[in-house]
Length: 335
Image 1 (tube, rainbow, N blue to C red):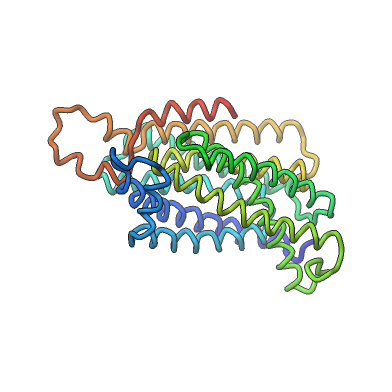
Image 2: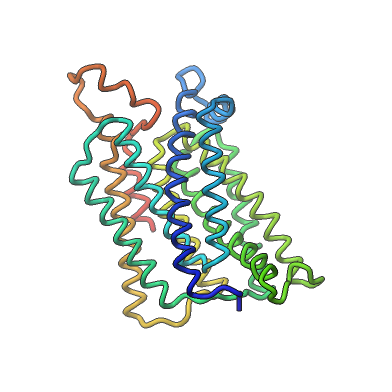
């Protein structure tokens, strides 16, 4: 049993929430930098990302995302991945509010309703999960099973990354990859905390567990870099809300499934709780779809042409909506 207990779970959820908001801010800055480099004559996602690397806004966004990632790692080390990872849905809420501020767009009823539904659903999911998740220390067999899954996902992600287009494919692949990465980060971080707390330390033992942990560490580093590249190139072909929406739907679902099926983080729960969790997950998915359908970039993109030209001055850095609502509805239904 890891050295932390239920008293640390609340703190872990708090860190995850702060991390999610920081991710929204960093995502907004990086998306603006990447989109500013995407022109009709240089529309390649790779070229846009490479050109954006020199922009101060991209670097500031990377700094904020790095700090947010550190907080997320600590949170994953203090609580089960099935409890922490769903909090990432707050990133989409933060990104949407930032876009509304930048574009000077009022929050309409649909957007407010979507935000409320997403936040309440995620809160319900985490609240229900907290009573049935447990702190576990997976054995070597579970660790190698997760490593095999991550290796398969890395191969698939590399194939998608080599393609010259495919915004939706990049978002979906990045979401699945980051869900498995989150599970691996949880394992490695919790082992480090266990060692620092005086528990039996598998990190320094010459055993199969050490080999499995080392393999997971290498794979999660590769997965993080490849996933980050998929996200950056996805920014070059769509709005940040679409990218975050895909990640906040797919990433937590994959993380929860991995935590339950491979790591054994859930105890046996009544069917009523299973159904309630499923309903909360579906409701969160619907809320996210509503947010994307009504996000400020989509509203601005559909403004009638007879509006004053000045109303278009902030559109490019934030959103290029070519039907993100429809694409997210398809993603949610496919879940």
